[in-house]
Image 1 (cartoon, one colour):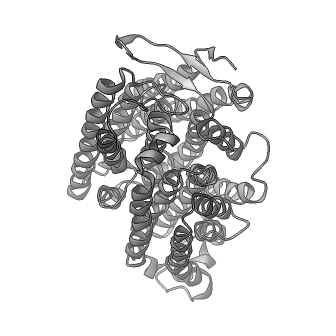
Image 2 (tube, rainbow, N blue to C red):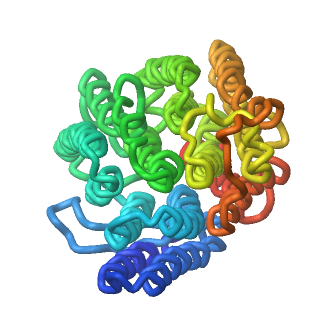
Length: 493
């Protein structure tokens, strides 16, 4: 099927950029500012949905922008993998915006205009990453995401927040420089940066050179993907407001990292070249190390957001492991875990934020009996946590099922052991807070009740999606369908 030239891939980016400046112009007119936030997120999602029928049938939308140099231009595409990521981020942005309104109003946070302005820029950058047709376009929006997220990380403007912001920039901008090096080398070797379904580097450069280039890209994108030992910025960034933590962990920044890694493996190198170079197994080993060690770190955290942060480091490595297996089912498991982890993890962070707003509690040891005060919130927390453990009928089970199939398909059953140990560690750090919430007596100092519907509705919707995507994953127009189309193009299944 021939690509169709359309403005829609770039229009989905432009609508958020336009709303960002409308938010800025609204200043202290709170209701108008919040209207533009919701309008921008919703409009973006509808534009992306309009591209589903053609893309699910195997089509691609293209938008060709201005050329920068021969073989380099600001081009956009909407293929199955693009829409998979952009539809996820735009849908969750609607819920995160609603949650943010309730959170910021309840806590009477300062600099709300700056907050919502940066949020809108972030969603534009994320969709720009998703719809990039080449490494140059991806890099532009990848760095824009870094810069737009910084004011959100330092939102509290305390010494601790400022220190976290400096660390965040030091890691992510360094990662960007490494990516830029890889881009320049790639262009020198191949004369192009445009993505291809089976890669474009085959026949360009010796195996030794291509292995070094692959490593450079993995390090560059691995910073935001939080591969150990490049992960240290992520737990530190938990000083940010809870909606920002949800943004970092479930929707944008870290998912941009794993999205970039998948594009590099399958659309720059290609499956056959990656297999010939033997780069998959070493990356799978690094991912497995991250899965296990990050889970052990999570066990030691009493602060709920920190425990969730280390859980994210571990769960992201599932995506990388699936991609590194270079097998159809492995890639399916890794890709679909981007969506499934997003719904589960955003539920958990939303719950942590609601608990903080209603009770002022941050540490798990202070939350005994909170299920009596906030039963709906903690029920949603339990559903999402069960998904992280891979318990059916949650969507986490679907991801891990395909990852296990992918490990066997690739001929590496050892990674089944990694999945099993990880599931046990997930249970070890998620079951205690659930047990304490529902089966221990609340402390006399624990006050609180369910939060407002501004906070509670997004929590319940995301928890429900964590179940729906596990019970009926093959519904029409679901993420798994987009994944299957993508895998067919990248590998064939």
